Length: 247
Image 1: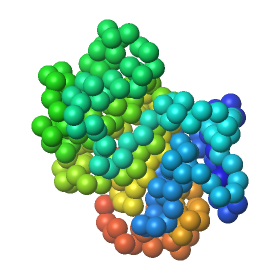
Image 2: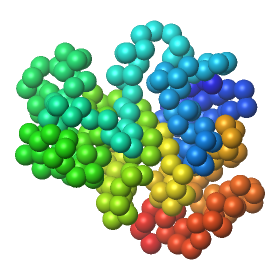
Image 3: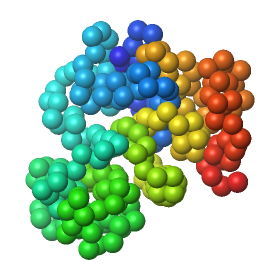
Image 4: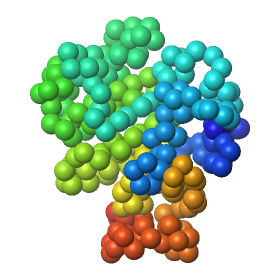
């Protein structure tokens, strides 16, 4: 697999897999369990290593250089958040900036800025993860991923375990946040409605293979058998999701 960026693009390519990601877009990897979505995501920040091919990030093979430096430069959000339970919210969010040597006052200011951006009150910073709701923990996870202002965000079903109302709220908030920040986001989901709502493009995967890459509107109209099967399975109301929930 090969992830790279030339000018304004992030490019992914491997034997049987060829994907190019535009800088600043939100690309969704959509597919069933076992289709290779999470594996593809983890290859980007070297949580997994490819058995063949290469991955390029920012025009440089991610097999070269320091893996710790690579991971600090890429925000990573997962479904179960992975917050340190013995750290306060403030310490969790400020961890990477502190490791990067930011002065304490800059770290504190960044934490407060991010709490506001993800819709959390400033006093949340003194709490511990077990004192938060699921939705609050996910917001903290997003804030932590953004803390050092990475250009790339990897998000692995970050809202999948939440109740429908909280999930809807976080999708709306994240979409607004992305419209302001313009990060390059690779977002994993098996939910077509979520993909249609959030994505600039949808990369449909099946059995480790890239089936097709389409915009949300193109996906709804696609004659590809696998894409059509997803549309039929999810039924009515997809057009509204493809309009990012505005209709």
